[in-house]
Image 1: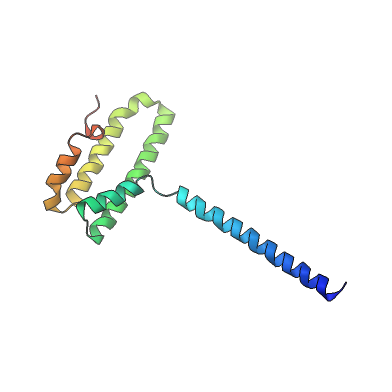
Image 2 (image 1 turned 90 degrees about the vertical axis):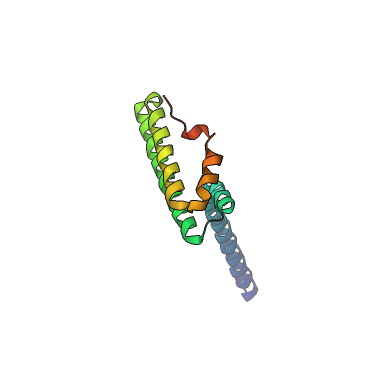
Length: 128
């Protein structure tokens, strides 16, 4: 075969490899965007609303990650036990994390505003 055929063949192989790598990395990027926390938008809005310092924002992020894990465990438990028994447990979990956010993430001057914003929330009311 001539040199030109080999050059074209190498160019096509390089193009195909680049195309394949591009397709694969795009799929990886899309997957990481889908795996973004369910609370990401809430976290961004909360930090902006209460103007959290970086250390408090990191603590809030860690709390939300733990809350998401606890909710996943509760969901798995609910699927195995049946949903009827999980209402009070989920409400208690929500109240616990609400108190942690209020008492350990927010600065004292923002707690009254947080209480006003969350007092009407059905998620924190007792389920009986």
